[in-house]
Length: 114
Image (cartoon, rainbow, N blue to C red; front, side, top):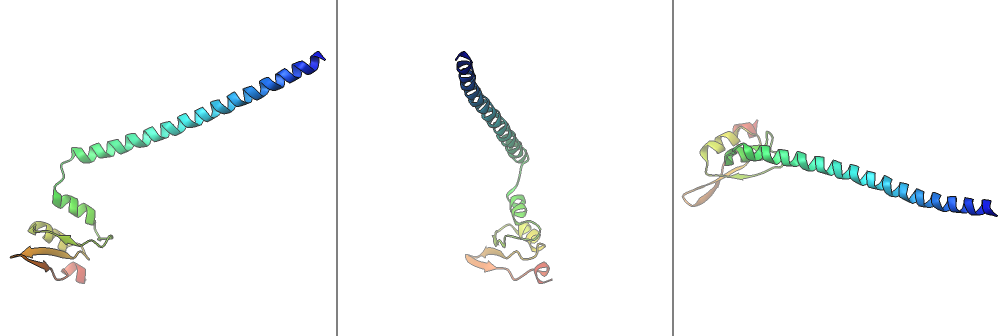
């Protein structure tokens, strides 16, 4: 029954080959995922470098966080008069500051009342 033995051995080889193909395919998938992860990490690094390379002042950072409409409903406490003036132009930004050791909440700005 030589024919049976050869088909049996080819059948065994077929299974091994199938496993190898599956392993190779899964390795290819993993490599593609690794490449995608590496690309995302590189993009994040570029963004971090871009932010770090440009000097940012505290007022610029506060204005960027508050945004144009204060969507997060933030309250800003600052002694910086220029920053308070700029924040008054943004509707819905409550401003708090200290005056002679008293904490004051500014009345709503014109842009908030409009």
